[in-house]
Amino acid sequence: MELSRKVDGDRHLAMLWTVAKLALTSFHSQFRLGISLFRPGWGFFFKLFQGLFAAADNAYITSSLIPDTGAMTLADIINGVALATIFLTVVQTIVSLHVFDNRGEEALSRAYVRVSFWLFATGSIAFNGAVALAAAW
Image (cartoon, rainbow, N blue to C red; front, side, top):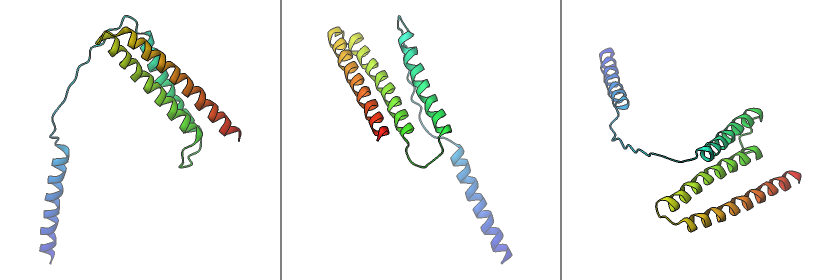
């Protein structure tokens, strides 16, 4: 009986060792992509990323000050919308620059920027107004 336990234990140990070796060895291909950026003025991009980090920092600070309830709070929703707005602004800027630089359609790029601005401004005012009204009730 004692010998069969030792044999079973050795099998389990060998199987665990094999699984550990497979888990530590990675078999995957690599995909590398290089993007070179050149912009005459980096101020706009620094402001966008500064806003992104400020929103993330705000989310961290508010989550550490508000007790954990296990549910989404108003602060979580506001921080999520702020991060989504900053992300959409970055995407909008990338699309606008692509249309302007690669396709050479300056008028389309400017029209896209104007429409995006008014959509973001209207959406931001509507969301903040709805939050204020919801908090007042």
